[in-house]
Image 1 (cartoon, rainbow, N blue to C red):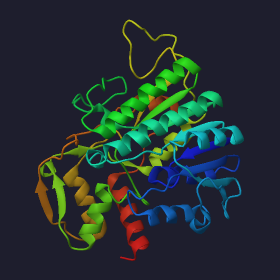
Image 2 (cartoon, helix red, strand yellow):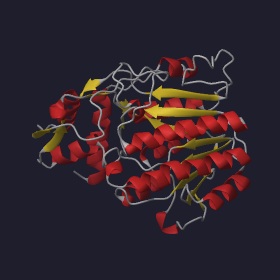
Image 3 (cartoon, helix red, strand yellow):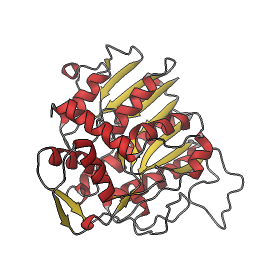
Length: 351
């Protein structure tokens, strides 16, 4: 089968491609625009792990892996509609895993138009391609941030999400609504993946684990928001990817029991679903920092600060509907996952 992974040089995209390439009967095409939101060399080095030489990359030019003959990479922007149409026409994908997006809750306060261009215009480009060249299943990245002002824990996919508190989460909520309309109109089976605080090796430099590890190893203070009074459903990247892989063949069907008089938002009379992908075991931020201290062997100097605009104090995923489909439960503890990241960080940066 043939799978398209967008954002394949990104954190989750990189690990997803790695998982797919471990299966000999899967052909993979990865696309990424390789923007400079964070160190592009980290993206290049992720690509190198898959046998892609960054020196050979040029816009719209397919590059075949030197390690995996079933893999090729193309530098491309999601919002390039003509290029996307041509790609789908040529490749005739069976499945699409749409992970590319402009990320960053706080960055969305600084660059709002960039988020709309990538996350909204880019996503409609994918939906249009799936409309004209039908796929068996479209899986796309959403976020736990869509729960916004909701404080009913644990967050369940059927909970209301009409009150996002950042533009980033608003664009992801828009993706869910756009996907539903296309599932309804054009019978595109789609699954929205609400990720909960993903972490692990090859992670993003703008995320807390990366910034904390870098600062603690350098003997520098770390900024701890909301005075550390936050909890997160930290989810190890390998557990995220295992769920994505297991979801692929389970495309959603029209729900015959869906009631239009009492409409639940996580399924539909269209082939559409929303799932949480989280660890379902929230951890206090200070406990997370303690795990980094244990892995680095150093004590953090904490700069306690108020909560930042767009941040939510707590996240906690109800993953029962996902587990019923995949039969998989996340298996990586925060202690083990943080240690794996710190070990990778030390090796990667020679610290």
